[in-house]
Structure formats: structure tokens, C-alpha cells
Length: 371
Image (cartoon, rainbow, N blue to C red; front, side):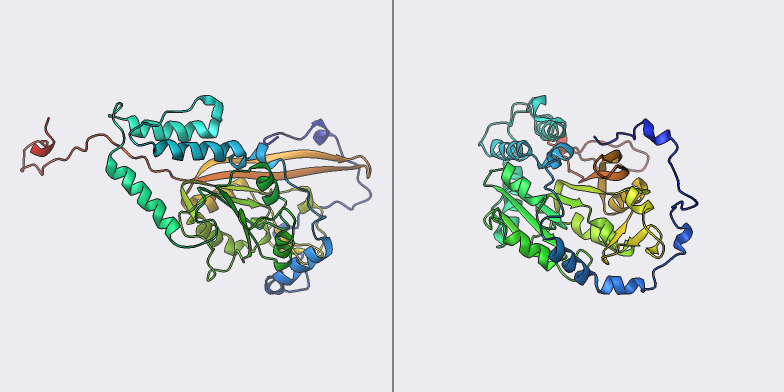
């Protein structure tokens, strides 16, 4: 579970042979002979080669997603749709749900109910507000794009061969859910599209470079409910991370959420890198040419908050994994984050305006607002 700590074995001295102690290179002085820019230029080739070799046998389907990220669970989408339906029942006032919907839904349900009932407990929302909301929805759906008629949209960036996308589609059968997925590797996207579980009416897979500032996503701004980043942000050059997050944040609706799980600082994978594999501080290249960065919580928080998102969760997940077959003990460090677009609160209370007071006079309520 997130937040767990390593077992008592952490404090037990580990056996070492001779003086072969591995540490993180200070200042990354030990560098590969190949220039770092070469890995950036040929990044597409390295990832295509990776998926050509491993195809869909390297990663396992991530069914743990629904435990770590309940925002992706079917109940979340169903309750979201019920909320939309309740808002369109004419003169009926939407009723707040019980706490059985889950902690994430309690905030959203109470938020919407309190804003509607504030000051007008027996009256429906103003007609103007309903019309405005419908017009904004039509603005998104007016342009033809994949999934334009969906009411709940999820995008996974760095989808690989679909180990996140397919569990979502197979678990959630609601026809109004639409899932987008993209990857830097055209080979990976082709493997997704040729998978027997791929349904073009519910999913759209496309090739996209997360770092390409000139290439837009196939969805309009303010149209996505969830964006998923699972071990993908760490694969790009650190200098381009902020702008990538900025562009993604503009695709989220008010209240939309970005979910991330990635490598944490001093994870076992970082400590096992050999001489010459460090490209820059905490940024390494693997033997196959693919790259990986190891984050701290503060670094990720800065990336998301700079993009205008609010923190919902930012935690370190430390796990002790034991491979009994190979008699290996592995200390893993991952970081899990949830950041959300601020959800505007509509205040339906009577607006109070004040006339500009004369010099030396106290403010008075304008005649049009006096009761």
C-alpha cells in the first residue's frame, strides 16, 4: 500500500563483497561516452526497438490501478453520469449522495449540492446557469473529434502496449466512457490497435511525442476528466518536463485530475546503474538506450503547481520485494501523485453591489439591491 515503509530488514547490515559498493555518482561525473543529445535524437528508435523485442510480454496489466486510483473505477464514472442526469431533470434540485460513494465523490457531491442550495434551498438553479452549462458542453461537442459524444473522458500518456487502457475498458462497460491513449513509439501504438480488446468506438490510440510543443492533442482544451501518467514522465529529458505538464493541464476540465506514478529518488534501479550510465543529475540511460529520471516529491509538486494544479495527493511508496526464486531482495521507491484543476464554485446568493461613496461617507447599498 502507498505510504508503507520497508520491513525491519532495512536496518540489518547487508553483506558486501570486497569494495564493490555501489553509490549514486556525485554530480554525475561518470558519463557515458555517447553524447546525451544522441539519446534525445534517437529516442524514438530506442523505444521502437524496445517494443519490437518485448512486444506485449514485458509489462503486466495494472489491475492495481483501481485500488491506487479509484478515480478510474467504474463507480466513479457511473456516479459522474448520475450527477449529470440529475442536473437535467427540469426543476428538480439535485440531491446529495451518501458517503457510500467514496471519499473522492463526497467532496464533489457536496461541492455541487452546497453551491446550488446556498441561499435558495427550495428553488432550482437559475435558468441562465443551466443554459450556460449546456452551451459550454455543446462547444466541446460541436467539433468532430474522437469521443466527442462521451461524457467521461480519460487520456493515458505513454500507454505502451495498453496495460492500463485495457483493464479500464474491460472493467467499465459504460458506453459514455471514452479512453484516449498515446505513446511515443509507433510500434507500441500498433500493438494496442491490433489487440483483440481494442474497440475504436470506445478508445482512440495515437502516436504522440510528449515533448513536441508544435503537435497538438486530438481533443480540445477543458475536455478531459482524467489524465494518467504511469512511469512516463521519467522517460523524457528533465528540461522539457514542465512544458509537457503545462500543455496537459490545459486539456483538463475544471475539477479534472492528473494521476501519476513514477520512480522515486534512490530506488533500487537507480542504485544499480553502472559507471558511464549517468547523463545528468539523477537522469540515466539504460543499456537499451531508453532513459529514466528519479524524482523527489518536491520536484513533482513544483511541476504540477507551476502548471496551475492543486495537490490532492503526493506520497512516497516504499516496498520491499523478494524474489525467492533468484533469492533477490529489492527495495523499491515510487512516488504517487494526484493533482487537480481548481473547480470553480458558483455562488447563487444575491449579488450585493455598492455605490461609490462620497468622500468621507460610508459605503451604502445601491437602491437596486436594497430589500
